[in-house]
Length: 497
RNA sequence: GGGCCACUAGCUCAGUCGGUAGAGCACCGGACUUUUAAUCCGGGUGUCGCGGGUUCGAGUCCCGCGUGGCUCACCA
Image 1 (tube, rainbow, N blue to C red):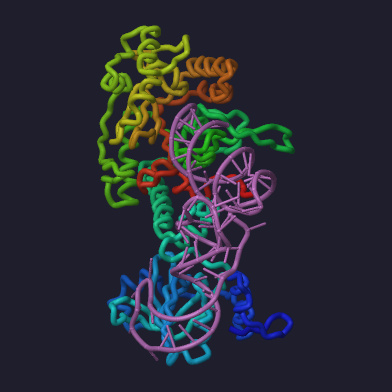
Image 2 (spheres, rainbow, N blue to C red):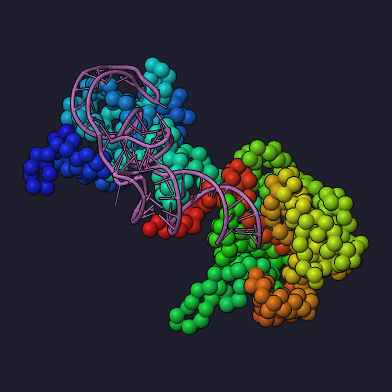
């Protein structure tokens, strides 16, 4: 192909060996024909799916549609190309007789990856494919880089995560996952809104990082000359709002934890936390199983799913079992009825090293996490967590070593964590003090003292049920994604170079 | 942070025992008016992740580094 360069010299595009240079040279081709290769507004009358689904009514009608050219099949005086838009793909058929010599030649200069707007008549080809018989087209944006291969797509996970835009162009299942993500988050909102919850926003920058056991990110505010923590949970602010009388609140928010990265951990992730005044953890179980089932129905149309080869039935109600029972069933050890020393011995027999001062509650929790959790494939509520690992949950009235706390477990992992909230400010202060003592012993993930939160409790927190759920992990479950990075559009990556 | 693995053309991948860098798609040129992974003919476009070393000679062997994946530890 011959083009004119900036100096008015005629240059053969073929002299540019690099494809990006060839495509850059084509900018001059389009400009020389009075076409802006980075065009402007285009009004589409239909999407690809509109045309395919509405073919019966649209056959023979004129339509216009915009999208990215994903394949081009030239046949001399006629050619076919595939146009992709958000809804899918549609084939376009072009004939030189119809377009005219000049425009047909220009069409031949369209590359795979270019964004064009087309106008034409809906018809079905001899082979049965619903197509558009092109009457005119406009270059809307010239692609200077070539797309990954049409058949194998983009596989290199490094590029897929760093250049998600390319991943989204060429891997339709990736688009599907993120569309599901949006539907799931939207379903969570609809479900909670319909139950009278108010969606609220609380600060992401905290003077005290509380509400969870985790190492926070630290940042600095210049004008106030103070360090701040990025939040590790939304819990303590949301409970302040229950004190304030909002009664039912939730927040879908970004959480930041300065910890390891893995297939299940991204430094920033999304949680939904909700609090319901006058409710308890039994209400939270009912709410959790129905919320998850609702989200599954919204995204997949079913509550029976497959996750990484396992058939999982999310249909409520889910089994409820206490942690002590679950551990006893699996290991034969009844941690409730033995001494701290016996519990440590039992752990060490299971191959778990516990510190010499470990209580039976701490041992129970460890035995559960190491020996039981990974084996729980079907959704299950594990109830009554030991008080040592539950500094914000209300004590059981019949056993002060346990709390009204549960975790929902599915596919061997925690999906949600909930409790009857501790609303006794005196007890809460003692629990914080115990955490602060742990902190001073070097546990930098132990909770910090939050005096204002205690003050809030002193004004009176109604009996409240609260629940937190890892939104990314729910999405992983519902989209059958093995890695959290597959459900986060732009997962954290170390900068290249 | 530890262990294992990967990195070759824009993309997907070959590359034997250490001996001139390969294919398909994409791209360029040509043929082709209902194809659809279109087909046919011609063209290989490269800092073999980076830096050292061994060797007459390194994509290949050795050392270091980088990025990523999986996994263990920590966690949600």
